[in-house]
Structure formats: structure tokens, C-alpha cells
Image: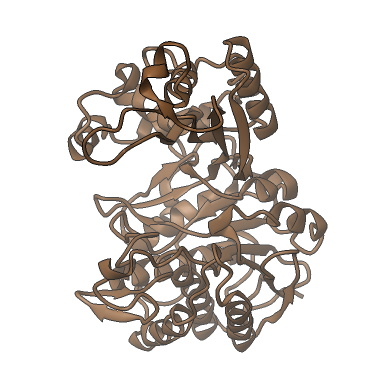
Length: 482
């Protein structure tokens, strides 16, 4: 498989799934013994509280993942990064395509502990699901991919294509060392396609995949107007830091909610016809989600195709929180002397995080808010988006259709963010997502879980992708190249 073989028609114009060329081998199911293996391996990983935010159990979990990968027949080692080690594994097949699998072994904190029905670091089965921190994000996905590789070997013999794995331990804190790692190991990570960390089904139970992710940059705005809080009677001659901050934040948007920062949209890439066609195919969920979220009206009156195009193709400037002054019961007549706001910006290709922050700084200065300090947060990731007509993307779409019996929802990119840019733009590798999640998986929250049926279907879809990669390269599954 080569990037140059990509057809010119977009997936919506192509014959979905190449129905007359289904992959060879096996029924449309997984053996019960493989699901048992999945459960036992997931339980081992969930028991390790690898919380990136406080560095808990990171070395132990990295070593456990390395040993698990080695047990599946791969050469694997731990690569230092200046932070959490990366688990690097590979098995090359000369002359054959290579797939890159990206995942992460770190998890979010378990707080609030009393909101969990069962212990967060003890895998628990109930109601057709496995519960535990990391079961969905992302330890369950690691094990699912290893299970799919195991299923391939059981059905076809040894892999006829190469596999490289990058499993990092800092995704939940913004992957601060990953871009440099990918740059420094570009030759070792060269691949024909990359399977990203997550996927699954949407609220309607329809499988989905995506070809990229938005970027993100986080920052705080801070204001200090005095050395200490004052009696509110001084409000006629002194400024409230809270009011000052509120005015600065309000200046960032116009009355309709559109970002009003000059230069903010500089560099935004115009979506291709194929990317627009993907979004035009998406269902109109604006009215339904407005009801679910109890939102009286969307910003700028967006609905229908305009709503979807904004969600996937436009950057955001979001205020996560405003903090300052008194917030307790009753009244406290005080003039707060300091206040701060937390912001995040979701970026689209080809926005530069540094240029966006500079534009916000220039906007504040131009509007008389030069006293508002900008403090950078931990995230600064560029967006990345693959060509939806790439043969690897088409294989992923077809694999999902094979496994689920229905054509998947195909997104040009997730509206969320992740460290995908170094892979798409740095390595030049097409990226798609297939996985085992669902909207109610409660990732990052109490009672995180993965449904057993989603594990079965998601792992089967990954197996189907492996089979299609072998066939597209002219390889009989299980027979290595000469």
C-alpha cells in the first residue's frame, strides 16, 4: 500500500466497503477465549493506577505494557522522553506495508472516589460491561489491538505486514514530550497508516471513524488591581479585578458569540471538497442535542449543515472558568483585588498555537487591557487531518462496515483534540480511529467502562482492517512477502 495509490473520488462517491472484495478468513465473530484473554489482560492494566497528573505508577505501568507486548511476539523497549517513558515496539516485514499503532497507558485521576460504584482500579463486570479507570481510555484500546493481532495470527498464521507501536504515558497531561519524540524517531516510526487511540459507536449505535483531530492551546488570563481586597465603598475610585477581567473576557467575542480577535483565523485551512462532503453526510443533531443539553439556542443561530460545519471545521475560544472575589453564601461587600480566567482554544489546520496566543495578546493590548496577564497552560498542540480518500482510510471504513454490517459515520476530524499533528504532518502518515468506546463510557469520570459487545465489535473491526491491509498490498493473509 502506498500513499500515491489513493483514488481521486471521496469515500461518499466510492463503492462503500468494496463489497465484492471482503477480506479472507474467519467468521464475523471472535472466539469466547479471546474475550476472556482480553478481560484478564485489561484487569492487570487497570490494577495499575497510572495517573499522569501526579506521576503515580507510571514506571510500573510502562514496564507492564512492555512485557505484555513482548509476550505477543514483539520486540519492545522503554524509551526515555524527559517525562514518562514511551513503550516502543516493532515487528518489521521487509517489502511489506507497516502499520503504526498509537495509544497511551496513562489515565485521569479517580476523583471523586465516592462516586464510583466499584473500586476504580479493580476491573469489575456488571450489566454487560467492564468497569475501571482506563477500561475505555485507553488501556482497553491497547488490549483490543493486541487481541486483534492475536486473532489474526490464530486465523492466518504470522503477520504478513509490519507493525510499530507507540504507547505513551503523558496523553492526559497534554503529551508534552511526544512531538519531540516523534521527530527524533521519525525513521523508526515510518509507516503506511496509523491507527489512532480511540473509536467506537455513536449514540445511535452506528460505528464511526475519523481522519484527524483538532489542536488545542490552553492559557489563563490574570488581573491584579491592588495589593489586597478592599472595602466595596472604594468601588467608585478603584477597579474590581473581577469586573476588569469580565470586561476583558467579554471583548474576545462579538454579540453573536463569534471570536472577535484580529488574526485569530489566520492560517485556517479551507476544507477540501471531500472533507466537506463527509460533513454534509452527517445527520442533523443540532435540535436533538439542544434538547439534551437544555440549550435554548445555538450561537449564531447555527443549525443543520452550518452547525456540523462549525463543529468540525471552525476553531473555538472557550472560557473554562472565571474566578475572583467572594462566592459564598450571603453577601460580602468586597472589592476583589485579583481574578483569573481559564481558557482553551481548539485549533484547526493550519493554525499555529503561538500565533493564536500572540493575536489574543495583541487584542487585549489594543482594547486597553494591557494589564491583563497571559499565563500559558500545559497544552499547545497543532491540529492534524488526513486525506479521507487515502486507501488506508478507505480500508478502515470498509473494515467497520464488515464488522458492524452498516456503513460507518466518517468524520474529517474529531471536534476534540489530541497529539496527532506530529504523525499526520511530521511523519506524513494517514491516521484513522477504530475502537471500543461509546458516548456513555464515562471516560475521565466515575464508573468509566467499556461494554463487552463494543469490545467484540471494535476488536473485530480492527482485525478486518488488518486483513484488508494485507489484501491491498497483494499479500495472502498469513503468507509473508518474499
